Amino acid sequence: MAGTGGDLEPGTLLAAYRLGMFPMGLGGGGAGPLGWWTPDPRGVLPLDGLRVSRSLRRSVVRLATTVDAAFDDVVAGCADPARPHRWITPEVARAYGRLHRLGWAHSVEVWDGSPGERLVGGLYGVSVGGLFAGESMFSRATDASKVALVRLVAVLRADGDPRRLLDVQWRTDHLASLGVVEVSRREYAARLRTALEAPHPAW
Image (cartoon, rainbow, N blue to C red):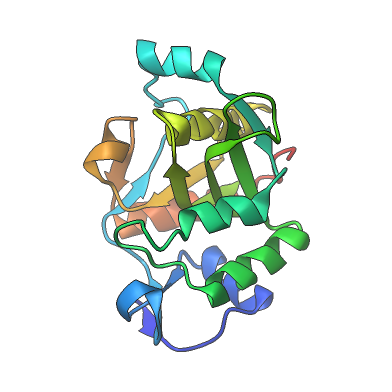
């Protein structure tokens, strides 16, 4: 952790991401005080390293995806109080909603049926230059969050810019099964500097 305190204003958040930090409350359920984290090692997903199993390919065909169609609903899904280790407070949700309306935060939605019918999964995060800092994902159907990740990687790879960086904060066994690897804080900082020189993806 790099420090505590501060606020969740858009300028503060964007400055933090440019420095390799992200916020998370230190109290239960994400309550304050606010902590600013720089994990070492850091979890990243190489954009050419996503592992898509045969069953996941079938789910990609079965489930529909959209981008930025229901940002607040995705954040609400990620913040569901019934989820273990929940850390997204109403204050955090409002802060990222502001970033979304300013064009800095984005979501991928996964639908069972036509878009807009039944939201079954998704993810959201912050996009600064060629960095996408994933914040959270949720799933209410088999493979739904994985399908969201497949769509996100497609967006980030669309222009072929090799400088892009997909940050997932920490490596977990679940994320490792999808291709997430760990890099040192020093290596992450170097990749981040390069990524910030890249243009925004076409959201």
